[in-house]
Length: 222
Image (cartoon, rainbow, N blue to C red; front, side):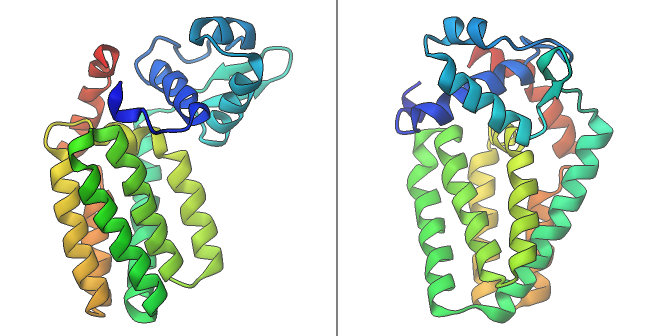
């Protein structure tokens, strides 16, 4: 658990509930009782309520009349569709970033990339949060407010699965290497190359999607 020791308590609780959903401990359609969750995780109902709100925004939890919060059902087909859109939004952001880079946004991307490097040895969950910062820095560098809003919203909805991807063997190291190539393309003003690289970085088609699905059961041991 040391790899997530610096994560704020509220985020950690959300991650624990998220993990239980992804592994099937809380199956689709199951009602999520605030009192039961508070007892299970040793917290008050207030952080549980906030965690459920965040998971609802991420699409993992639904609020139903007379039933309250229940675990949502996300099919593999729906997940692929969401990642396809995410890949195109990020490609557009990287392309614009390469064309519109400023000293400030360049520095933010470089610093986020350095933070990813520092997190490499701390485990996939610690790396995820720096990885998130890296992608948000690219969104900001696009200097397109609407794109930033849409990319950020979908990124957060896909957070559980993007975080899970990093638990696939060797994926963290590969992710960091891919980041390096993306940074070089953006800083060099190679818009088309930056878009292609980040699109491939996000895509979960083929073997990568199979690895993502196969890794779900392994979370139970974590």
